[in-house]
Structure formats: structure tokens, C-alpha cells
Length: 293
Image (cartoon, rainbow, N blue to C red; front, side):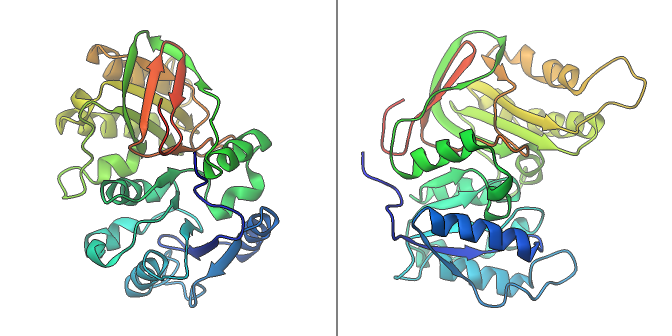
């Protein structure tokens, strides 16, 4: 199958969410250059406003440039954090040109909206985190970008079975944050991926309840859980965040696959949003864009 990003591709690098560490950005940029790409950094990214990388107007303009400039082949986010939902409703999709978008975490709703518009949306490491990503996850990312077949991701089957459908989701907090908005996730007959970092177990419970109350959980044909990193129950309690997840997900009666290498840890393997995938017991097989599951 054709490569998504052949060597020499020009990649727009912008920060649509939180402020970032310039040293980590530079490390990621150097890695992309070593892969044969030409990173093109947006002007004005070092003009932070509070916790944001820049003002809403600047970040929105950067995003429009990254997704419309004729001499740009793809957009790769510097980092996540917080900020995309502040500009999501103002994106002029009709003025943009489909091209690969790469990121995760706060980029979750942007990836889903882009996939609906014909963009290839890759849930994978941001530029900020490339240098700290495991060799296995980096190789999987390069395979995806080269259009090569990817090995299935292995996890633990909490509820056995098989299912196929588009793969959607990402960060639990962002899926919950868009409930009741025009960007609410439609997971109908989809494999729903969820991961989280740094949220106490009771907040995970609250967000899962929001997904349940909004109908998103009931729509899914299967649930695929990545890492729930540093999502702890109170000290000394005899339960775990996994108990919260099981309470909400096992009654759905669909396959549930847990502990997949997806999320905020260094072993963050990529997947293409709304591309076909399949779940079979303890294995999640994800199709490369344009391929079959």
C-alpha cells in the first residue's frame, strides 16, 4: 500500500494546545529529520498565554496553515495538554485540505473530527514525546507512516469475543469533555479506545459515567483499553482503577481488551482513527490506512 509520508515530506509542526519545552521540541524535530522528513515550524509558537502555547487566535491560525498550505504534506502536534477544545468549534474545515494529522491526548477530538472530513488521523506520539518513546512504538509508527502492515497489539481479555469496526476514541477525559457538544464522539458499531493519565480513580469513574449517560459506551461494538497511568485509588483502599473500569464496561456485553500499549507511557503505539480494526480475545488488530483489518 502507498506510503502516508514518504521521505522528504514537509511536516508542519504547531502547538494547538499547551505550552511546551523547547528542548524536547528540538529533540523531536531532530528525530524527524533523521527519518528523512522536513519539519516546518510555525512562527510565533513561543508566545505562551498562561498555560497555552499561544493565544486562541494564533493557535487556530497555525492549525489552518498546517492543514491548508499547499507546500505542506502533514501536520504533527508539538504536544497535547489542554487547549484544542477552545478552538475546535472555530476550525473552517471547508478551507482545509486532507492530509495526515498526528498526535494524541488533547488532540483526541481534533483527530476524530478530521477523520470524519477525510483526513488520515493518527493517534500516536506527539513531537514533544518522540525522544522518550520506546523503540518498538517508534518502529510501529514508522511502519504506519510507510504504509506497511503492523503487528497486532496484545492485551488482556476482560470480556472475550470478537468484533470489527472503525477504531475511535483516545483520551478518556477528552471524550468526556466533548459530550453534549457538536464534537461528541459517535462510537456506533466502533471499537472504542480509552486511555488516561494522572486522574484519580473517582474521576475516571465520573468520566465513564458521563460516557454511559450520554450513550457513547452503549454504541460501541468493543472496548479497547490502553494505559490508565497514575490513575490511583486513595491510599490504603483495597481496590484499583481496574475495578472502576470493569464496573462500567463488563455489563455492556461486548468484548473488552485491556492493558494495550496505547497512552501516556513511553510505549505509546499508534493507530489510525476511524480505520477498520478488529478485536479477537486478547488481540487487537489495527489496519493501516487504506488496508484491510
